[in-house]
Amino acid sequence: QVQLVESGGGLVQAGGSLRLSCAASGLTFSAYVMAWFRQAPGKEREFVSAINSGANTNYADSVKGRFTISTDNAKNTVYLTMTSLKREDTAVYYCAAKRTGLRTGPVGDYVYDHWGQGTQVTVSS
Image: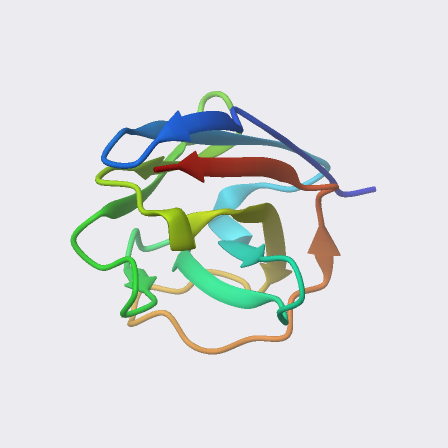
């Protein structure tokens, strides 16, 4: 059974940094695309970033150049390193996983099968 557990959220001032972690169990990164989504109050959940088994990445335009997704295969953990945070980054951040098999090309668009419970990120001015 796939389980995803996020951590690392918190309160940070605008311009600051945070690193979110997603500890995954019941899956191996070589067969999955891992992603981060976020949902701000009153808004729909939106895609943030994804990484596939070929270490190819994709980012929403709103976070390009500020956020970095990465994995530690030994720890079965995916990270989202967020820098130059803005108030509009305030949201609950969710980790997601999609079984795809080995993928070495660009990251595609997927409907994700597994979700974590989310971690709150609040950016203050």
